[in-house]
Length: 190
Image (cartoon, rainbow, N blue to C red; front, side, top):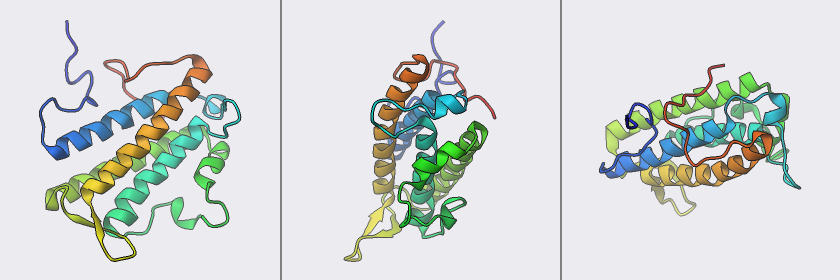
């Protein structure tokens, strides 16, 4: 019996619209990243390799921040959500990475899961009102605004970079390797 779409809901469409392909690429990266970080205890989420300070917990928190920045401040000019709204980023520009060590696995997974759900809802609403060509809030110093396509591409790039990091970190934790989650995989609820 073959794999069905319900077994791999993160798989991008074979022949969709531009927006469907961009969202499909983002969803595959989100699923792969979440699979690479899934079902770990505090020690697993805080594992480091070599001289790097990166951890899977830090990446979970950082990508939560990236999601929130993209679909609040950059999309519509809204203030960031908690916990980002109270951080002194000048004093600690890497707070999302460094503070994760003090968070429990449950807190880190819940932060990422709820932030991504909120991002999906905001993206769906934005696409319903203007598609990927619509201009968003974020602008360059000369006044030119980015469009929604740019935000999606930037977030895909961010996930691509950090999913590669997560791949190496997870292999060091317990040997988990692979390009995509296996068919039927779903995140462990916390």
